[in-house]
Length: 189
Image (cartoon, rainbow, N blue to C red; front, side, top):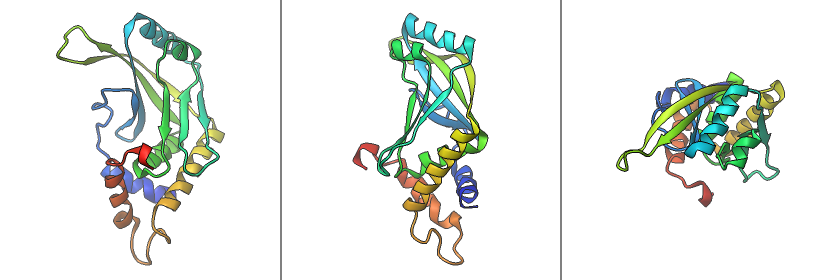
């Protein structure tokens, strides 16, 4: 119930087109869907992205940290991306409520849309991105359970104890953490 209530509040405050504003590689959402953008440059990186899109069989890897202060890391396990230095690894910090709620969405949906975009540098004044395609990355049931458990545990630690005062709904507590977490540098945590 706690995770569902956090998701309801997050979805209310979620910018509906955060995916469209991404200009760099990074996790985001497009409405209620987890949507990662992976920006590639140059012929080798474009070729690697096209191979991943053609095969569509590269799994998600999940590294759960041993420390409560370290981030959970999700990545697309595609060696050809790593060999051409394409970033396809995403860190979710335990003190950032927005990122923890993104993890809850990922766990509840059970999949992530991974969009590969090529950076066009023809015009030196503009950075245009062209979509190469989208890869729907499914999570295993175990991965979804682990991600949800980790995110829920970190949200419980982040919110005041008890998480909600008697009679005070989550909608009054969580929003302040959602708005402040976008201004926090994760390296300062």
